[in-house]
Length: 117
Image (cartoon, rainbow, N blue to C red; front, side):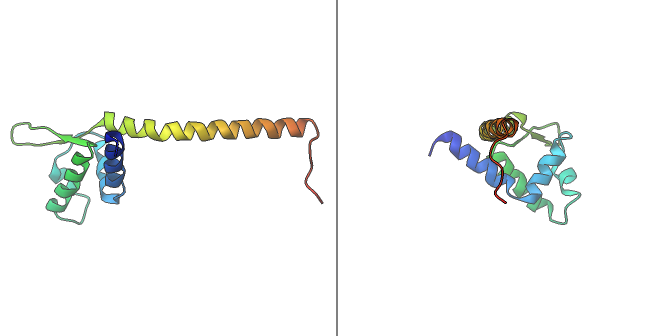
């Protein structure tokens, strides 16, 4: 398996969980500690820590040390890589739809085929 594929697999598997997606959404507003990230969930802080570990393994988040605090940070470069991967396929499909729209417009302008009655 290609390294890029492995990283993509880890990232998409990590994002498949709704708790981890909510953690990512929270971190999009700024860094937070495990305690802060655990507040809205009815799960233990240990469970939240495990979710964060999965996100770290997928390189979607990082941790730093600030005295006694260990805030979790979003890794925007990794999210950008995921977005770029998705966009390459979205752009192909959009181009296909634009081509289809152009064909349909030209047929309509030329009084092209009408549906059978």
